[in-house]
Image (cartoon, one colour):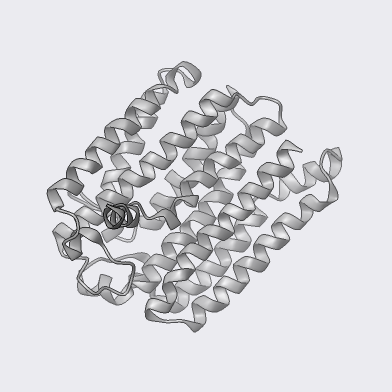
Amino acid sequence: MRRQVKIWLEAVRLRSLPVSISGVLMAIGIAVWQNHFKWVPAVLCLIFAVLAQVVSNFANEYYDYRRGADKKGRVGPRRGVTEGDIRPKTLRNVTYITLAVACLVGCGLIPYGGWQMIPVGVMIAAFALAYSTGPYPLSYHGLGELTVFLFYGLVPVIFGYYVIAGRWDALAVLGGITIGFMGVNVLLVNNYRDMEDDIDAGKRTAVVIFGRKLSAAAYLFNGFMAIAMLSPLWLMIYLSGSMSQWTYLIPLLYLVLHVITWIKLNRRTGAALNPLLGETARNMLVFTVLMLVAFVL
């Protein structure tokens, strides 16, 4: 039983979940700071975001297996269905059951965001699958990073803020761009590690297209751009005097962690790159949690 739980947790890819959580935390923080916070839609957004990412992770494992992209003994973390620990049919069924549960949770947001949330939810569900399957799987054509930027950055922060606060705000757009840049880095590390395997499988990720050197440079650039995008927020904080001075240490801490991880990225190869995916997600989560604390206080 314990082994089965471990196998399914590997399929969930816990280390990647901060990507979906961070976007909602940013939306919550902005709503709290502006006194427009409602906790019910906030909780629903958080559950929906996590379930949507789990669907994407399950679908990625199942359809990569179907395409032969994942092989036994791969450099990255083991894949249960590839190693024979999970039956392909079981993983497929669990994927679509999880998708159905995510859609039910998403329906709970309609009273807060209106019926226009339905096409948004449909789009999120479609892209969670289109990332790995369909006639033009996005991750196989160098569009994975753009998908992450949109659906783990802009969409959860902008629309999350809308259903939580009941209004639109330009600051949510900037927050979405920030989270988008950070989220892209998690995927970059994953594809940076898997470049040779992806080439063999015919999977043309951005790392395959541009190579490791440019991808590592993009990783560093993304981190600094993420912080730069929130410059108007830092200015607003300074002018309003509404937050403590320690708030300015948050972006500095993130950049220190970011650069340390980037240095490791340039020095490591193969399986030694595995922990950096978790580190990149951790850096992202540390930033958003500290920002949430600052917004609340």
